[in-house]
Length: 233
Length: 233
Image (spheres, chains in turn red, cyan):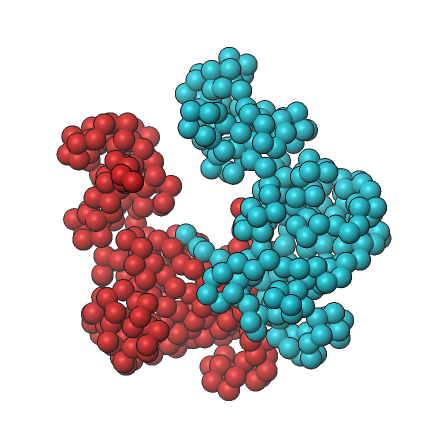
């Protein structure tokens, strides 16, 4: 089957964003220019931009042009941080503690993370919600893709903003697998809760703009005062 | 602020589907007819159909026309049933037991369910996954909106297909709030698990095509062999 023409345009723009040739917030060429440069019709160029907008990669502003979406702390939290007050109100997590270590990749990490890294950074964080330590989070990324990450401590609250600004890595999708577990000794110490307290265990794999798996993360969350909220359509 | 013109077209089509004037699977008028009937341009009619397609309300088929989406057991399960094997594979839940009772609405149910019902049907079901009773589910709907539901037992596995086929009610969105709880005596008996086992508690409110809250549901789920999976973008 032939690749549709708009796919060619999308891939080209995504590649330009991924390499930093097109920076977050910068303006894309016009539909007419894109059409001329890639040898497609202006209708195809328009369709490509509409699809990129649906994917959240660009933002079109009436009468101004099309711009590369910048991941802000707000958009990052809004899309990827699902813990909410029971009434649906957003809560901004605060950092309680953070530790970044380098270690050999586990077999699953090596098999699944992009670039099959031999070594990874493990970022262990405790985050609190409204003053209560509520999330014990372990994040794993490749030491090659995120070279020097351990030198950047303290890391910002929203890692995805750092990924984009310092590594040109835009997280576009995260798949989460959620289960219910009891707090073990480690977790109960980190969160200051009794062992055996029920917690949400959220296992995330995050994908960049090219669909590559770039991060694995496990979050253990108290849900006695907060809940994980999601909308299905 | 003026309502955009495409909103007028969308509302009209949604109302026609909601009242049964346009049945699931039936063909919509052409863009040109819609434009003429509602007094908008053909471009606006096209935009309306594109938005209805994005919402999953209609399906456009190249060269054939636009059709009202029918909720099938498969699409219903795929979109709204999030328990999966750890490898992501879908599992079809099987009914173990079912009980439908009529009772007065609790204050929260009366306040939030569409039509402020005085009385509700409560559907209690145990569903099993791969032979293991895994979900203990309590579903609440208005006795007015779903008149005679208690006479229809045994209800089909996917209630949303019944809602659409027998009541013209299309569920378009479900908001879920997830927390981690310990099995109490009731739940442990229903699922045959030891009291104190960690379970996912999934509280759902489901909305119809007009954005009305038509169902509240609590599901208590074992997640020792299955997980709740969701994709964030």
